[in-house]
Image (cartoon, rainbow over all chains, first blue to last red; front, top):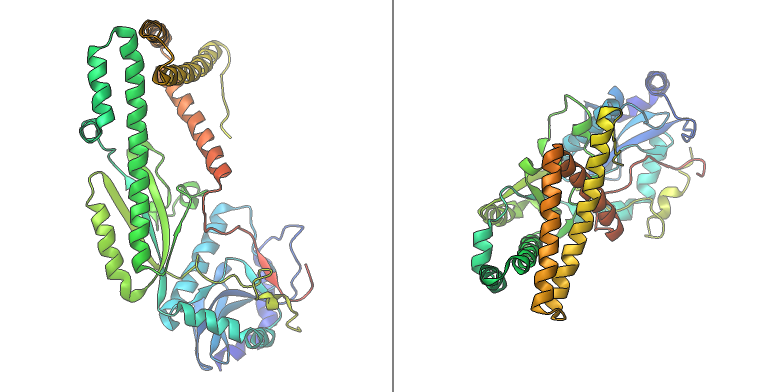
Length: 317
Length: 114
């Protein structure tokens, strides 16, 4: 088993690793740990050779058909350097992607998730949590995460809205007949009504899309309309995902909806055709990415009170 | 947080004027909405509506003229859209829109208790 070899070199790995990162004062101390990328279904002889976060060699530790993709580490990864963090995140994601390609849908861990102990401790943890992990892997098998962003490139023009709305037509007529001061107020009211209709249209586009997607996907979640942080904005030279920054800018259009959904790979076509329908609407653009490992839909391991508290137990290192 | 920079020296006057006009415009917008609401409620006579609308129209014209004279139209627009963004962010945070993103940070399991 190739993953056993790593254990023997643990000392060497720790020295390499220790040189890499400056740790903040309040960082938890870790003498020996395993940085977790994801869990996959794997046989005892499974192997995954790639480079992980901070250039660490990645291995897969298998127990009873469940494999944890890891590298050996002795501290958390933290840095004030955004470019550094971005590189780490990209590596983390790349490793999870590769594991997914090799072994099927992975259960991804969040960046910087570390289990104290060595490979044996990790195996023990995998065995202890086997039923929960097995259930989670089974549940997510063949499912991937897809992200959808609907952007209004061209706002619908006034004439089209007036044509459809009795109230706007009525106001329009009253403005024509009114004296100057009254017309001024009626125009303000007219503008308010236009704004309301635009907002209602956006909401209905979003609600309608969400409902139709829900019929094909297993789960659909709405995300914040604008990501709270755009790494690509802050760090020059990163160009993998140009859609990451949301459009509050006028030239970029306004983001009407950001959704993330979990769907079986067989349903990708059906979802694509729903999105095509929306994209065919005048002025709307749909941005679709995936398949991703189910980052949003992975079960919360190690949280409190959800029946998976076992992670807190000492893996006896 | 958006910093409001009024500049210094010669710029300070423009900066301050921009800020004052932006605030006045926001006030006028609120007045106009209130006026429309009262007009809709049916409690105002036609004459009152005409007078109210006329006054607001004159104020708006005055403000537009002032902005043009001072050459601060763009400045006022920029400042107001910055403020809008700020308010929108605050509202979105208040609403606590559904979000599936998780908190950043590290997780360490096993070993010593944290």
